[in-house]
Length: 558
Image (tube, rainbow, N blue to C red; front, side, top):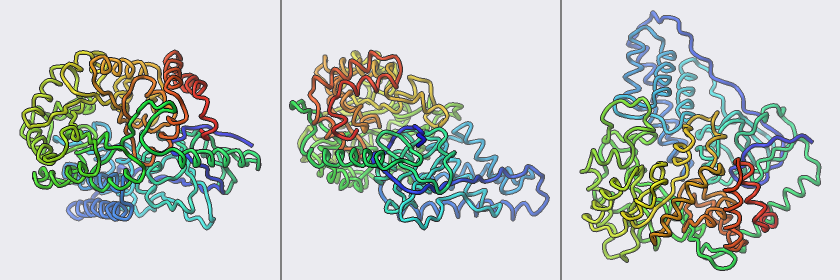
């Protein structure tokens, strides 16, 4: 047997023959184009539109979170600024394929232009580019291979959401990628689809096509030519996880009854049923920008009220994040003041809304109307990208003026975490956005796959900041939740509870296993796991130390 280790991002065990997904779209030659430039421009724009339609078709068939990601990719293909760049390129003497390639390269590097941002993830952007270039050069786009096997394990360098949407979970029993990270779209969608998955698995492409392997999405281990005993142990762990999930019901709490409400991250009414099916006690992150992404102008107040009301009526507790526009979530009607060389450090979230106060007032008014007649504490509204107490005060005042009683902020900026005790005096609650907080703490762009090892929630520096913010909230008598992907890790969930976090919000499919992990441990054990993790010097050591303090993990198959 030979083992490869990556990051398990979707638990489960897959055993079968390998199907390798390889191949790349060639870089178009930079030779001058001497033909009809008008016709060549039309050909380029038609290819972009064809790709947009294909992505929309796959989005409609996929539904759920996959729909949102693919719909966003379709918007990339239709971006008017991109079309303008392509037109200029062909006019300057480039072929259609080369003009598309260079135009995407421009946006890939700058992640912005003409007041709009085009990329939700660099990998997603590259996928749209490659699909368009392949059409123009008459190349086949590398995609999910045809497999006659009843069960197969897919291995690839990376897996675009558009290809992931085509996987049949009944046949593809797991997938493994050499690149990617735990907070990328591939990992998030794999959990939503229930496909065991491992990412950032170095050397995985050395496994030959047709080889017999075991892929364990919980441990992150890929085993070549596993013996029956190894498969039996993995299956037993998987069975233990299933039994633990089946036996853990009701509200989130530790073995000795310490309450840790388990909430769902949602993007709108369509996500209500999956959240209910998985036992969500409420919504910890309503990503309201998903109601706006496809719009040239903001949705009407009536449309907003209807969407908010549907979610508010379904749950006893709903935390809505006001528009988190800018950087990786462009909204055409909310442009930044100027082209930004680094949009992740530019006008995002509350910073952008303060330049467009009418949009913020309109959204808060719609939220207040949606909550009319419901219990006063049901609606909670928070602002993203808050830096200091002054910004928190401005947002809280805007909420109060709209008639909203519970106003909070997301802690994603390190300065906000460090001075959380100041901010706690201005708001009613915190929510830790671990994805962005890690990005800014470690100076690591979330979209650079080669640096995903640094974008790790187990790094002790991040644990220290989260503990500091949670302590500030506790001392002020306020709640401090977590709504980043870190909450979906059952082991990390126990550590977060031990750090003093008062609620956990995650993608709906992650809720049952997190509930089981909490229910199997006492609050004292969670606190000891948190202390042990913070005392470590590396992310790997922190995770190992936490596991050693959580004795029931092995019986849970974790």
